[in-house]
Length: 149
Image (cartoon, rainbow, N blue to C red; front, side, top):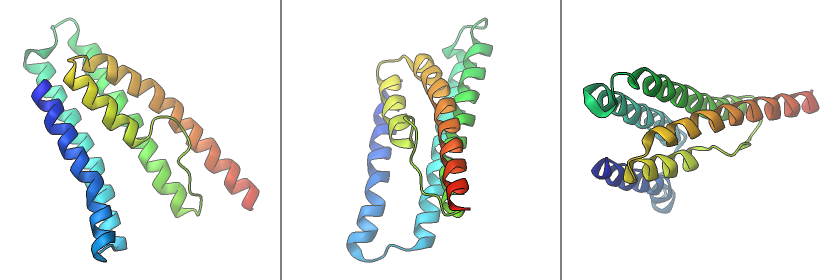
């Protein structure tokens, strides 16, 4: 778990630099921003798939495995939903970062959870707070759309 946490945090740190580097070199583009968003979602999903394999291959006891997998998938679904709502809101002309569980917070928490080998509790926290954030964003977008229309 610790090695995975180190690799995940290093990769996430590099991911934060790609947009800044593109802007610095004058190569930023809308397509580059699209690629960045797509690969952010795929990277997050890949980590969750890896955690599922880890749990299935013995990282979780047989009796705890269903709870772990359900928590993992809820964290993934709500995390992806939060990111989707941000993108969908922007497509509707509403720019929001409402909520406490943004991608940055998820990355930090996942990294810490891996480093201290407490990934289940981190996934549970991400699932619960991402669900809350999803509804925060949805109602923020609704309010903005109603005020604009």
